[in-house]
Amino acid sequence: MKDCSLPSRKECLTILAEYHVPPHIVSHSKVVAKLAVFLAKRLNEKGEAVNITLLEGACLLHDLLRVHDFKESDYNRFERNLPEQEKAKWQQLRAKYKSSSHEDAAYDILKDKYPALALAIKRHRYMVLLDEKEKPQSWEEKLLYYTDKRVMHDKIVSLNERLAEGHKRNAYQHGSAEQSKINTAKVDPLIYEMEKEIFEKIGLDPLEVTDEYIDSHSTSNYQPQSKINF
Ligand SMILES: [Fe+2]
Image 1: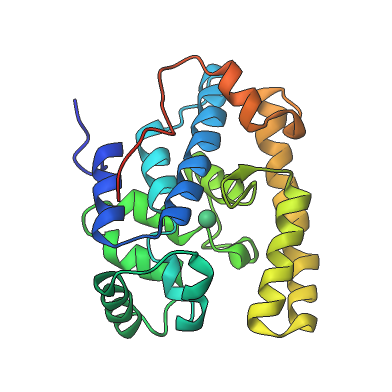
Image 2: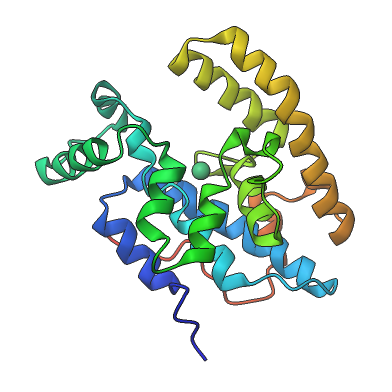
């Protein structure tokens, strides 16, 4: 029976289109979902109980409001002409959620209809691991948090590579190199611990799990790259 408190994959893609999420963010989110679902299935084979619908939906929608973090001057990095309708929607969202992070803004939008999914999204913020009360608790929350830190743009890479790129980008965006070094020294080791927890359970080497590995070891008909026009 369909769980009405969770969106289907098709519904997630409709929500992404409704919010004019840029195609490169949609591609990133689909790869996060692909990796997360792969790991979740391996965990389930080991006797865990990961809710795949919840996890996939949370991954697909985790960056719903990612544009919220961009300045208007960043739009020219998107390498395409942005329709006025898209820009207008983003301005409207920015005005509404100006003091919130993109994680909290997405939580606010989704919490009434999809509470568990919204909470997982709220808990994928990089710094959340330092917050005992708010850090990811369930497998679904942990897998979203972790897999987002394994996907650089739309490519699965090592934690090392992705975190280094993220730290460089954040220092550039926020301009506080000192604070970001302090944060990194505290948070990164916790992400490696999370990686260990997941991979010890499934019995694989994290570096072994790449796009190619998943494509050749997937047992289901899950099609993460299905063509949807936005
Ligand atoms: Fe992400």
